[in-house]
Length: 110
Image 1 (cartoon, rainbow, N blue to C red):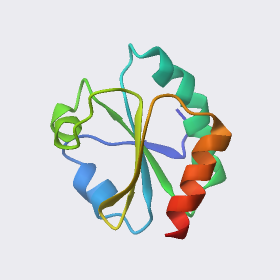
Image 2 (image 1 turned 135 degrees about the vertical axis):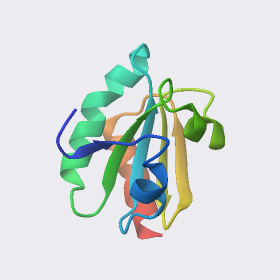
Image 3 (image 1 turned 120 degrees about the horizontal axis):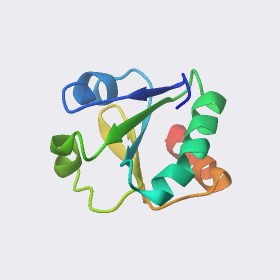
């Protein structure tokens, strides 16, 4: 995981995601998930490319079930863009870097 990506937990989710000054992309993932592992490089690249404009966080759904349940995470990877504590965009499944950047750019302009 890149230094530009933070790990969040049930305890740190509210202050680090919902109360963040910048929009936050949260990657809901698990160790055993093949598509999640495929997305890891894309997530790291996006975190570096959007540094200063976006916070990128990862939440392991096996270890932090309360937040995953709160947001109804049933399939992983699920990516959610939060802005001002609200969901701006939700994406399920593996995405290409180009598609993710397209979604991020649209959400950041809102």
